Image (cartoon, rainbow, N blue to C red):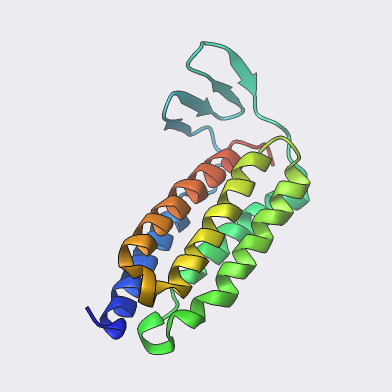
Amino acid sequence: MTIRSRTAAAAVLLAAVFGAAACGGDDSSSGATTTTGASTSSGGASTTAGGGSTTAAAASSELCQERDDLRASIKDLTNIDVLKNGTSALTEPIADIKEQAKAIASDAKGDVKPEAEALQTSLQKLETSVQNLGSGGITSVVASASAVVTSANTLMNSLDTLKC
């Protein structure tokens, strides 16, 4: 596989990956029920697999805005034409998303800080994989992109449980 075809494959993959992560609505004010793994949240409460119930944390308006900005940035990332502009077109948007995750980690304190830090870490690994695409191959990009989707979805799900 040539570098150009690897880049094209990476571009298609990244668009699909970030498209999946950008999905998910802002249901912070709805009574919708969300089920993820062993926990369920409904409106303002969540129930864990152990049966204990915890109330969703109240979030600052700043944190709620950061959540909305992060969702928009992830969605905007899917509109980048990597085939036309190259993988370097991803550098700035990914850096912006990392900064947004850092701000969320700082403002959220313990509420969603681990999830925000996990997104930062997975984005760093994705950046490295894309930079090393020629030598590392597409497999590394796929694995890193998958980790980004998982951590982005986990963070967004956690942010959506906050009361805004």
